[in-house]
Image 1 (cartoon, rainbow, N blue to C red):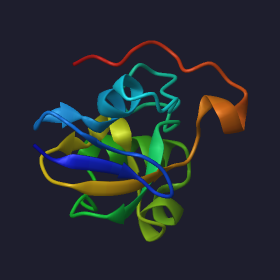
Image 2: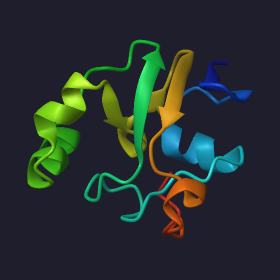
Image 3: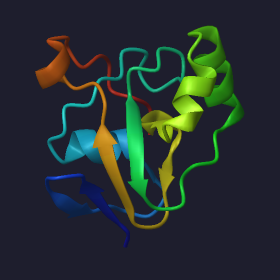
Image 4: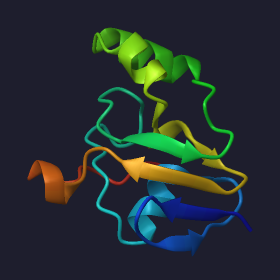
Length: 111
């Protein structure tokens, strides 16, 4: 099974094929996901520190374009955790969490 590492923090094993946003939530990382994992709000952004997860999905491209942050996000290696399927090891840095934003998490994303 692959491992998810939080930059400067914990590492945990994840079932292959699981959405990253769910893996984070299930392991105590309070990543925001205001739209419930539908790639609309962009609050579940993570910076990819290591791992081959830099290819954006069409949903991500559309969401980031609608928020006016497309090029900035791509250049900074940011992805939406609701659109990443964990198949291999990955190291990430969560961008927006309950702790650093003061906002509630949002509805649990779909499996």
